Amino acid sequence: MLNKIIHFSLHNRILVLVAAVLLMLGGTYTAMHTDVDVFPDLTAPTVVVMTEANGMAAEEVEQLVTFPIETAVNGATHVRRVRSSSTNGFSILWVEFEWDTDIYLARQIVSERIAIVNDELPAGVGKPTLGPQSSILGEMMIISLTADSTSMLDLRTMADWTIRTRLLSTGGVAQVSVIGGDIKEYQVLLSPERMRHYGVSMDQVLAATRGMNLNANGGVLYEYGNEYIVRGVVSTNEVDLMAKAVVKRTDKGMPVTLSDIAEVKIGSQQPKLGLASERGKQAVLLTVTKQPNTGTIELTERLEAALT
Image (cartoon, rainbow, N blue to C red; front, top):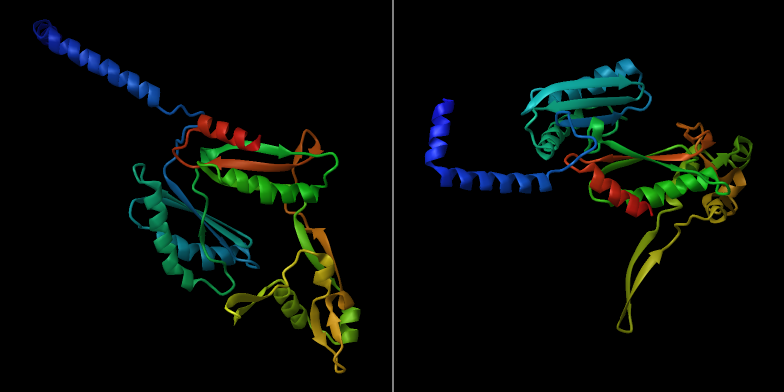
């Protein structure tokens, strides 16, 4: 066999030289355009399905939530394995597809299957949602935020509403998770004694708090050839204005506001669901995961530019 190859090459020198040049050019082009990744994706295409079931024990979540969803996605096109985990109030499934399955097709298949089973879940169970389009090896960067003068509440608010949204707008980022700090809340701390004094029920308080930040649409007013949009603007982030929300009126027509029956203030979520630190100092951490088929080196450069 080797003698035949040598004999053919000697009698077809020009053809061999042209083929060698073409192979060299093709190899050079491929080498220059090949993605160099620090964390290559070595996992099969996987779609994560997450479902919240507040108040349910792990056994109930397994029987009433996880099993119906797992049954729905089992046997779907190109599905090779389904794994699940059920904990108190939460269900998660990993639907693994064949290696050559396009990740977008896989997510479409799972979306169609869980849409069918959504109406069969018990009342109070959240809608099954797909996890971020990433892989196990997709976690590529952890950003730490620390400050000497800024409070952990303001630092967490900055991370949630400024830094996270900026990083998510970077092409190739699948998800940005924030850990640590104090989550900002507008808290209404009710006083049972004052509620009893004014005859206010919990339903009345809930109705007032749900409606006090909803603007009302009054339509359009046409006058003198002009068009005026009529709106009732009550939405605010001022605690003092929130405290003036009317809960009910007394028999004499006097308004009872939130400030009469409760203390309205800005506070942090209690109990805390997570803590984070950096070199022993309290911090806020942002974990960045990338999308499949995204170069880590190029994405890291874009993220560093965005952070700067």
